[in-house]
Image 1 (cartoon, rainbow, N blue to C red):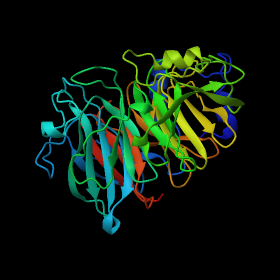
Image 2: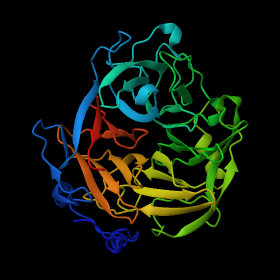
Image 3: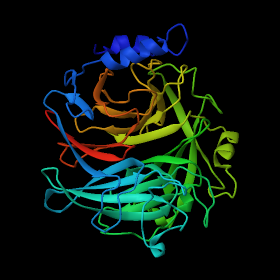
Length: 418
């Protein structure tokens, strides 16, 4: 069924009396049958890989183990990804690889191009033609740790975020910038002013150049980086954390009603590049709000949407909406029902205004759509295995969705009657 907005708000109550909770078996069956949505019911893929609505097609692009144009192998751990305009109508994808120093399928690169020779993560770049064929793919950032998600910038680069606080040959836990124009490995520069913590994703407000950053911790914060020079992150800036003015030190996991607006302000982080993992502790001590595993974040239509993967009274996920123009924060989605939404991770605002979320939950994972009216629906099902979707994004012309299956490491192009 497709949820009406009234049905959705009924499900989204934050008290246990108002929340609809299913047993694991009920949730399993609900996830297989819920919400045909505006594109219709999912159709079984005869290849057993990706179930989509009727009229939609997909093609597999760059996959782990294939030989890239630069001679190195496609690494594993496909994660966050951004899409950019290229020459001749091509789409340039920059793709993260969430890999640790012990990963067996790490990103190959010359040591001279690595940020840290112990690092196995980084990014690869794909050039895709207008008819969705892979023209080339190659490494573009190397020697980093656990590049989980990130975000595109309005000036045509990808912010790749390390979900780590380890120290190898160098300190980790930073943001790195990769231009979409790069045709090979860039010189890695850690943007230390943007903070050292378990970074997850980033979103840039094109009106101000401010960068909003999530932190994948159970007690993580939401950050705002104000650059000294707009569109020039390497020039430094100031890091802040969000505070709900009427609820300092709020724990946002429970106690918030969907749709209620809260005024916010921002507390300054005085030590954004600490030797120990203290950034979120400093912010919380100043009154900043805690968010349960902040992950995907995206700017769209004047708002910043971000996922708390384990937020909500059932611990199954929340979507929040922050409006910079009014400095207000609202809980946007909280079904508390694994059959509706199960551990939302990466997020994108589609050209038609819908949100698309990548699930990283137990059992079968879906790409979940949310209409502007608040109805949730299943757009795609991982029919191959129980691993997560990641990196959902759209081509500049809005006609192709790109998304990753993290393991075994496949990038898909999806198109149809949008």
